[in-house]
Amino acid sequence: MFEVAISPAVNDDEAALASPFVKCLVRLILAQDSHGSWDGKADTELLADFIVSKERRRTIPIIGDPDPDVLWRLDKFYTAVALAIEERSGLMASPMIEMSHEGFGRVLFTAGRLVVLSKTVRDVHRFGFETFCKLAAAGTKLVDDAIAAIDAYPEVARA
Image (cartoon, rainbow, N blue to C red; front, side, top):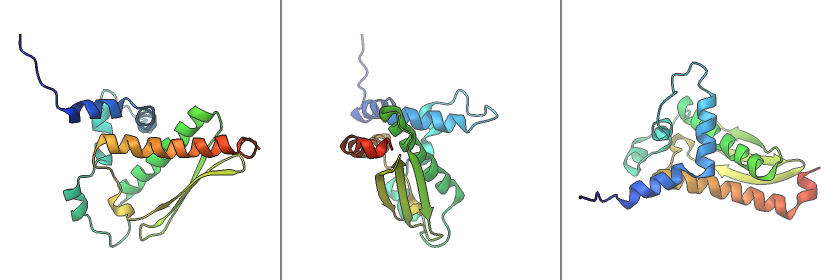
């Protein structure tokens, strides 16, 4: 009997795709598909645009307005962060994204009267992650940071 060696990257990608944040992002993307054209597609296919290699990133110019597809991905990523915060805390987290036409801005998340997360966004033209693991790690870290803020100030978050 032969055993097939599975590369660690494949196992890491499978673990990343099974993470709660990535599952939330996939559900959000599928919810946008009103015609069912994405039904049956693998999660890797749905999230492929979020993966941007170093080589590809270098070829993307940062002059001019950000591409609408990039802005869509940015919006979906941060909306998935908000949904994951809501799933874990039971509180509605509202993302607010303010972006200049040059691709710089800020993302704020509020829960009740508490700003649970504030992030400066730069070089939106090149928004993406090198691997599914980095995508999962970035989203999970943002969610964890927001949950820590909610845990530190629960009265304000519930106000």
